[in-house]
Structure formats: C-alpha cells, structure tokens
Image (cartoon, rainbow, N blue to C red; front, top):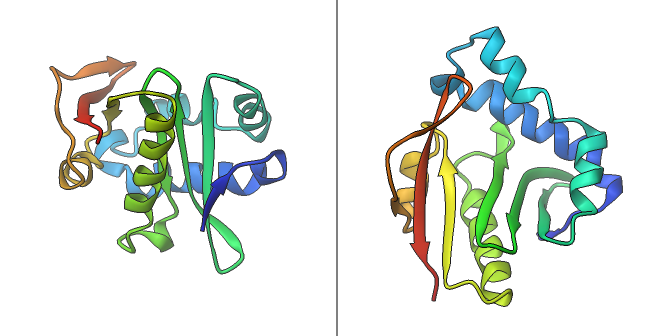
Length: 153
C-alpha cells in the first residue's frame, strides 16, 4: 500500500532511506566513508518532518507487512527527488509502484513530463519504467547523478 507520509513515519522512513543508500548503492559510493557521510548527512527524522511541511512537494511511503519498505518524493515542478527501497523489499515491484504513484501526483499537478537525477545503481530500473537519458552526468560532491526524463500520459 502506498500512501502519503506523515510525521509518525519519520523514524522508519529514514531508516529505509539510509539502508537503501548504504546497502544497495554501493556502486555509487564505493564504500567511501566521506561520500557516504555526505550523502547520509541530511537523512534524519527531523529533516524528514521538515520535508513534509513543504507545500511544493509530496512524500509517499509504501507499507508491507506492517512496516515502511519504500519512500518516494516529488516536487510540483515535476521532479522525482526520492525513491528508496528497503533492501529486503527489492525486486518485488514496489519501486515501480512508487514511481507510478509519484507520476500520478505529478500529473495531478499538471506536469506533462517527469524528471529526476538517477544514481548509477538505479539507472537500469528507471530505463525499464520508461525514463530516458536527458544529459551528461551532474556531480554532487564526488557522486555522479544521471539526468533522466519521461513524458507522462
């Protein structure tokens, strides 16, 4: 079940995000403590609660077996900013369902196109759900991000 996140989700949601980065995005951070530290630095329950207060974005969570197993976010300008999955829930179509839910929100806001910056880890996944490359890699600190976009219908 995918639903709008609330403040009570903060601890579990952040745990999912942090585990996803630490355990699934190894090809991106290469276990480099500096890169990992920078990437995780804003992934706190307090920040999650502040993200909920932004009128310009939506935060969603997916639940399975009584716990949060995925977290997604998108902005009113058409950008998917978060899509993290718990390592134990990977390859169960939950990330795909999250992207579909985020795209529906974008369509509800009048967006005809979705855009995002993918990790190396998620590139193939996003291609499999219809996203195409939209420019050269962008760097955040030492991490390359891969711009992608999709026409929504």
